[in-house]
Image (tube, rainbow, N blue to C red; front, side, top):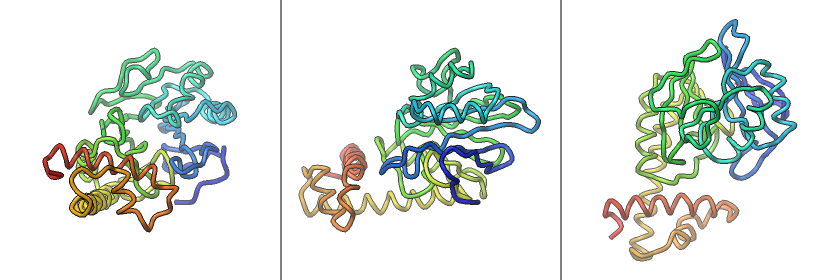
Amino acid sequence: MSAHPAYGELRKVTDTAAVMLEDNPGTMTLEGTNTWLLRGPGSPACVVVDPGYEDEPHLTRVAEAAGEVALILVTHHHPDHVQGAPWLARRVEAPIRAFDPDLCADAPALTDDEVVDAAGLSIRVLHTPGHTDDSVCLAVDGAVLTGDSVLGRGTTVISDLGAYLGTLRRLTAVPGGTIALPGHGPELPDLAATAREYLAHREERLDQVRAALRDLGADATARQIVEHVYRDVDESLWGPAEWSVRAQLDYLRTTGEAR
């Protein structure tokens, strides 16, 4: 698997999936948003997943590379994945589907375990909350598009840790060797193995938060815990870390472990 090409170049990753990288690098987006184009063998149409921001040069390149678009799918509601979907939908005259019905256009919301037949492919929807309540992964042809549930590098920000642990356990059950096609960063060769690593990482972080609560007291704030646990981490990452610590605190306090 090769590294990302220059921005705006379509790169084939599997027999049915190709990626175009949006030029929106940042702390939260890594190199940028991966817009995925899925096309079954011999299909004249494709499915576009996560168009990205309303970035007209990027969306225009996506439309030109896609040609006929049967459907636009969105993995969750964050603007770096969905903001450009309405613009692209108008340009290519395609419906939009997402787990959140408010993001849909001319089509119903996605449902867990639904199989979407489009562009010569059968795409299975996996509701994978934790990063957001409406996050989904999309299983197709020996690969899973993971949105922000699993990134190509590093770990994702969590809003609901209990839900996310359930998501990770679900992803550990995919067949070995299933390729992860993430919303940011490079593809990963074995999604189940990565999900197991994520689970171990989350348990390690929970242990660190438990230890911080013992040192700082049960009423410690997320910021205080970040300053205690992440002292050796660049402060530019403390903001995202605080969001995740807040989710960990909510989890521990809900389960009664933080008393």
